[in-house]
Length: 265
Image 1 (cartoon, one colour):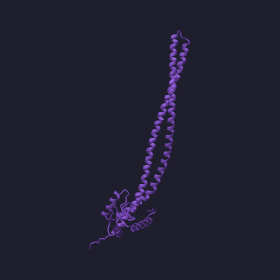
Image 2 (image 1 turned 30 degrees about the vertical axis):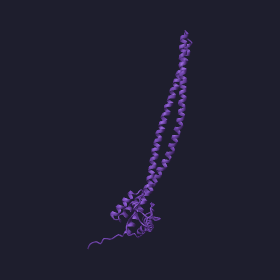
Image 3 (image 1 turned 90 degrees about the vertical axis):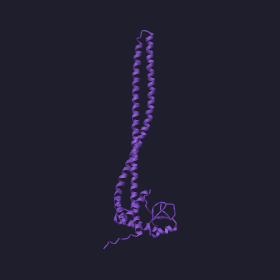
Image 4 (image 1 turned 90 degrees about the horizontal axis):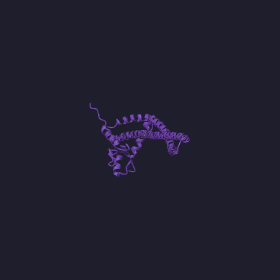
């Protein structure tokens, strides 16, 4: 004797689709919430790395200019020792020509001292400015590191909290999907993939499909409420169900999830 095929009504198909949508929407919500935090963490890490490179560059420039100051101080010390030497030699010269030659050398070394002093002041001013920026950068890095630590902990906690719920909902999604025939399930998945919100099955709000501004004619609303055929919204491409079914299935799914798990949808 041939096995009798059980005919599933359109209403039951619509209920199964909407139930699956409830579960998948919650999965989307979990993944979207988690998806924002890793991006925030990554952005903070990139920003900190960029500031560190700037800080290292400023540190190198400050060191370079301090080295320049040390070099100029050596030039000044050397010039002073030469001045002392030339003045001492002036005491033993035999003629004015030699005295004047030493005098020019002294003037040259005094000019070296003046120029070096000027450069030291310029370098010192630059260092003071760079030190100020360097300190601001390091304070900003410390602030961002603290914020990054908080965000990483938040992400770890969120992953820990939502991973169990996600695994549970994935299992439920697979279970509910088995109750939908392959062609209808493929249509549902295609609509979900093409929808920015991930919604494939929606109810009506003030006579318009949820998320749409196009009010349906009363006759079309009546057809949806009769649940005799699967109706696709011509504007959004979504499967439409009536408000009563939305409310009924939302309550039913809350009870199912409540009884099967500690999680709530």
